[in-house]
Amino acid sequence: MAQPKINRVTLATLPTPLESGGKLQSGANLWVKRDDLTGLGVGGNKARKLEFLCGEALDNDATCLVTVGAAQSNHCRMTAAAGARLNLATHLVLSGAKPKRLEGNQMLAAMFGAQLHHTGFEANDWKNLETARAELTKDLIRDGQRPHSIPIGGSTAVGAIGYAVAFDEIIAQCETQKFVADAIVFTTSSGGTHAGLIAGLVRARAKDPQKVLPKVIGIGVAKGFALSAESVAELANETLALLGETARATPNDVIIDPSYMGSDYAVPTQAATEATTWAAHRGAWVLDPVYSAKGFSGLLGHDAQGEFAADSNIIFIHTGGLPSLFVTH
Ligand SMILES: Cc1ncc(COP(=O)(O)O)c(C=O)c1O
Image 1 (cartoon, rainbow, N blue to C red):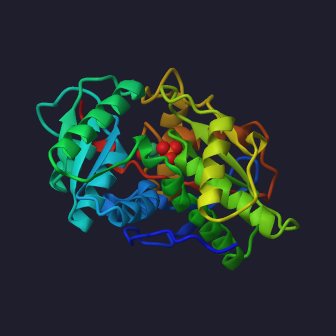
Image 2 (cartoon, helix red, strand yellow; image 1 turned 180 degrees about the vertical axis):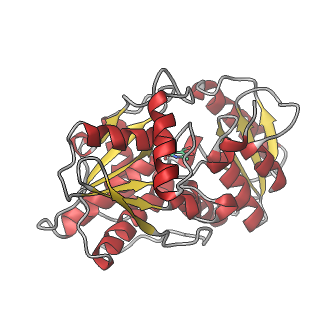
């Protein structure tokens, strides 16, 4: 099948390193895929999605970017960074009230020149936040702008292509580093990273059905956005269609474990605090309490439950989140 034209702009520093992380308690080998080091606006997973989302924006002759997220959204901060790189004005619709002093991701987003729209909504009120994005987008169109409006987390099929490509990048690095990956574990929230990885997995499986491919395990950290295996498989299938692939994912391909979220999005857990210390002491990997620490606590939890065989190879995708560590309120 002819490869459809997909516009991509270079925003990330790729490939990111795949570092050895020593042994887990079970004797499995840990590997850390450093997507916290994608470079764009201090890095994180969203750089990969934004390469395709901004490619789409430029294709549509957009004059500005609009997106939405929690007050300390990494996705919003990285969209602001992409806007700065591409000379596109950026509007961010954020949960929470306007703080007295901007901190963490908000401080960086403002530094990159974005306009922050503080809505007062709760961080997990994704429905109202999305409505506010739609309204702002309409206002900008009324003012003669051509906004490229990106949903929460950049989790469209176009954005997810970034992680289908990342799946191939990981498999190629495993081959270079002479091991076969048994599982890829990562934090999932709006589902685009997960859908992209599943699209990559399904595409690789269709290309070579004999090839041993890793299990893809998402550790869910948000319940405001009702993610299911069905919805992730559906997004993966839209992504596969955009890539011109005929193979399709099923919900059986999608593993989402929400049991490491704790009581809600962004509410700290003891396991995440312990995972943060473990990672910092083992490899000086800096995890954030909202996303990557909960994801990594899931990896350690699955290991403790005996899910990984001794000498198997388990990859943790470190999806970033550094700036929220510096938020004091
Ligand atoms: C640091 C970090 N990790 C993981 C995720 C989850 O990615 P996704 O929204 O694609 O599920 C996010 C999303 O905001 C994030 O900021």
